[in-house]
Image (cartoon, rainbow, N blue to C red; front, side):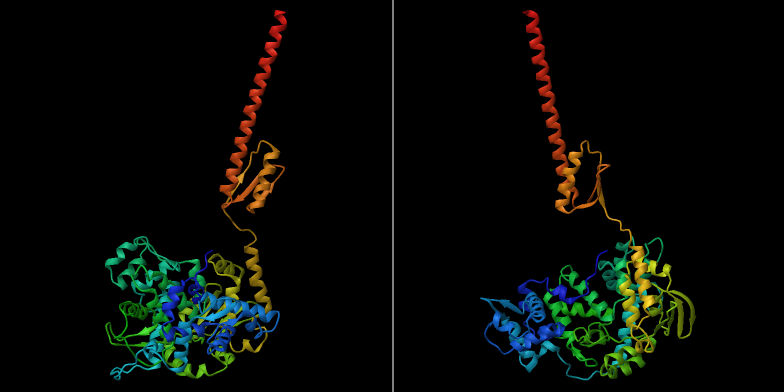
Length: 518
């Protein structure tokens, strides 16, 4: 099963050096990448920020303890080198001069301030507050998730979103997708739901996607958008720069769109459909980043609820950021699970209920609660859809009710162990494409082929008595070529033996004829 990309780090490490040189010309980009780094990477950068000469390897090792400390330092430096923040020169580490200068500007307020967005000079006549932005972001984002799970809440996503869902492999498109080009978004979505048009269905990757936190889901969308940027004739660096710029903007403030590049203006239109930015109408000169945007690089969990309660959630959102991590999690937990596998979910969100239905057998529904039970069949159904046991356990832990968080461990061990056992039970046998080699004429040929395939590491199964051998799909070509050589060699030996036997018969016949003549 293929894994969909959700980490911006993995994507950035695939980019060439000249792309980074352009990216690092913006202070906001340097700050965003710094915020995305692990703590040790941040510490190394801050320690070298005002060191204007290369730092020798031996000198940097003195900053860390021997053993595990050196190992962690090497891992951190490997990531920083992959991001082209540091380079190696003459047994020394040297920081990228462009990154160094622009990161200093980001911290001290120097350089081009427009890198962090251009604030509008006039107030907005149409009042927009944080509660409104949270409500808008929730409606837009949950519309996408509702469409994926097949519920009818909210309006259908636009064609751009549907295209992204198909390209990312989260959903399979309809069979007549080419007809969609001349349809509006609502007609396209309604046509896709028709049986003769080809029903869009969620894929294994889509099921995995639903169990991720919102920040991971947003990055998964944006990374797929980056993969599509070239086909849309967009500048990849401008797209990435705008993503990082959004992560540095302030929630509730409006920013001017007048100085955006053509690629960024097109990108702004698409981000509206995801709920990442708000713009009152197409072509408006101002836009507002939503909470989905401002938390892209902050590491703060995105706190969105059902849009029916978005105003209430938004009012407590700012205060929740100042809470401790435990209190923050308690405020969003809604699942209670008992040792008898019964599940009680205190929610009225159709989306949360639909996600639970992926791996829980739901039984009763009340105005503000649903009940169900985790069964062998419900877990096996989830496993068949590509969801792993670890993802189920992580989801249950992340959304556990405050009362459950008072215990350690949070989830009952009997439930956790049984979910893992059901996964092991299902994965006892795994299908893998292979090639079967049999009917070897000689035991020597079989053993020679087995030895060659074992050296290549492509043997899946073998039976010496029946002279049968199973080879992986990748190993079929070299092993097949080896067997053909054996067959050719065997035929040549047989031909040579027949020729020698024929010559021997002729010699005997000639000798017999000579004797008779004598």
